[in-house]
Image 1 (tube, rainbow, N blue to C red):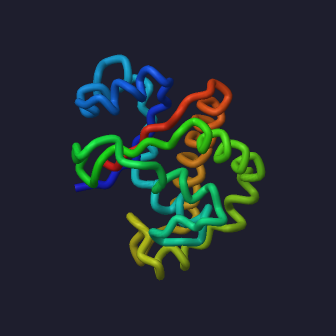
Image 2: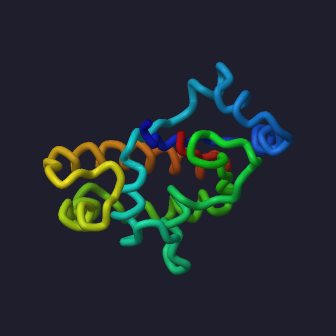
Length: 162
């Protein structure tokens, strides 16, 4: 089974609906599912490149909140735990911190050997570093835009692994 990263921009009304229950029905409802951003299996590599941490969320790096942050919105399991809510104030801080992350900065921090030695999902020991770097960069670029749009619109972010 794959661990796929999903993100959904959420206005205050949608946040209240999700917190009130049935997060699965809402997140996979027709309207929300069309807005759901999937970053496939790149989520763990993105977290590692941005933070240098395998699973931890560093206190001094707001970008640690982007992938693994937020608070559970319910007890409902989406395959690898509950959906998590990143409040709009944190989304805005993340979007601001992402401004310095262009492709050159991202690739400068990307090291396939580090990903392999730290067992970053889904990297394998025979991974083609350049192909994987391109895959992770493309997913990160989409996620960066998604956070920037959410911040501009004053929205929170719901994230989960499924």
